[in-house]
Length: 274
Image 1 (cartoon, rainbow, N blue to C red):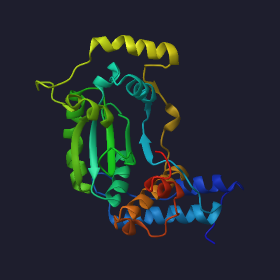
Image 2: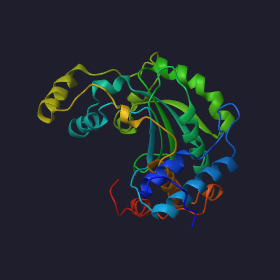
Image 3: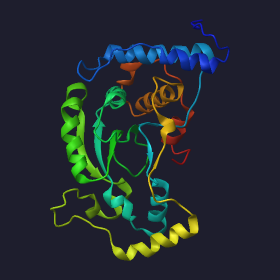
Image 4: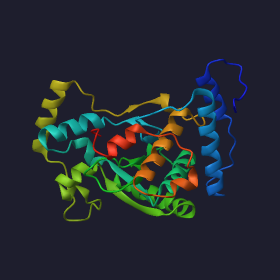
């Protein structure tokens, strides 16, 4: 057994402390090597297995600097009325699409260390929505097309230095662009650039009065990052299970010693609703 010493007798506290103590020298300047990433993940999985056994999680997205933008409320309005909420017309994202799960894991480390002027919310994820294209994604949330362009210019050299993938600006949620293709236009000078329809305002007010939903973005300071943690390692483990399912063999470069994810298996075979 590879149990590590810790003053606490709680195995989860032991795991948490020892994950935080894993040393790494990753920097955006020096880059992230495959061997460094492999070492980080393997050490983390071993600490978890040796102290608490195999764990499971249904989560597949890792956030940094999270802000509650009211997305559940906005999607609820869209699903009920087939309209796009006013708030979402100022929602833009810089989207990075890594080529494989190895680069997704590296992107997670990039986002962890990336300093942005607005300390923007960012996340890394696998795409499980059945009607949405793509596999691996990283998103940086912006409040205007101008801010998105600034961030795009800032991060492109960093991204291209460390991983392979596409980088672009997109607007809001993919579901909106599927229903209203012109919403997906990000250039304000384009004649097809979509603006909010004033007649939708009454429907939004009606929804809010019946659901008591907040429209303002709320800061959530409880998500501050403080080193590796069990939750994020389990999410990365889910990413590797996903890669194995879609025959992305780069998961083997990270580790073949992964914990089986019943959630990923059932989701991708249609046994669960995402």
